[in-house]
Length: 167
Image (tube, rainbow, N blue to C red; front, side, top):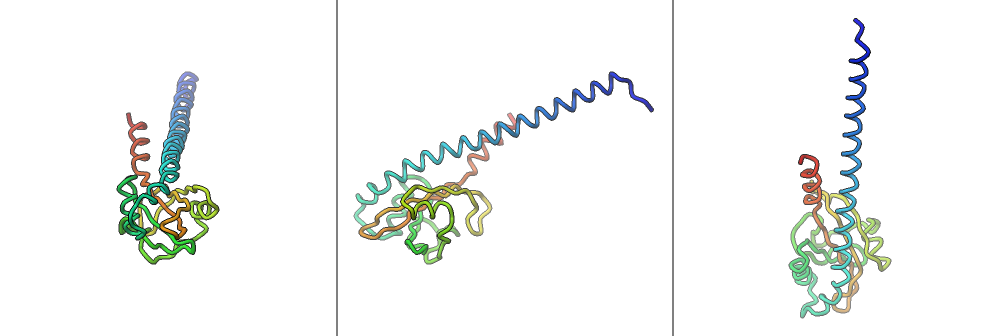
C-alpha cells in the first residue's frame, strides 16, 4: 500500500514538531535546574560566610548544641566534622550525620573546605532516597578547627521543575 505524498509530508512535519518540543523542554528543564541550584549555592555561600561570626557569638562550644543552634538559624541540617573526617556534632539524626561516623575526605565539598574554600556537591546521603546539595567550609568552634557541613534537600528544586513542565 502506497501512502500519498501529502500524508508522508504531514507525518514528517508532525515528527519534527514533536522532536522540537521534546528537545526544547529538556534544554529548558536542565537550564532551570542549574539556575535554581546556582541560586541555592549563592545563598549557602552567604550563610557559610556568616557562620563563623554566629558560632563566635554562641556561649557553647559543644558541637551538638552549636549544630542545632545553627540549623535553627539557617533551616537545614548542620554537621560538624573533625579534620580527620569524624562526625563530632550534628543537628539531627539523619543517616549522613551519625555521630562518630567517619566521612570520606575526598567528597568534593569536604575537599574544598579542607583547603579553606566553600565546597559543594550533589548526592544522596547514606541510606537516603532524596538528593541533597551538600555545602562545607572550615570554621572554628571554640579553639578547635572543624569542617561545617550543611545538607540542603533538593526536592523543592525538583518540584519546581516538575510544576513548570506540566503547566
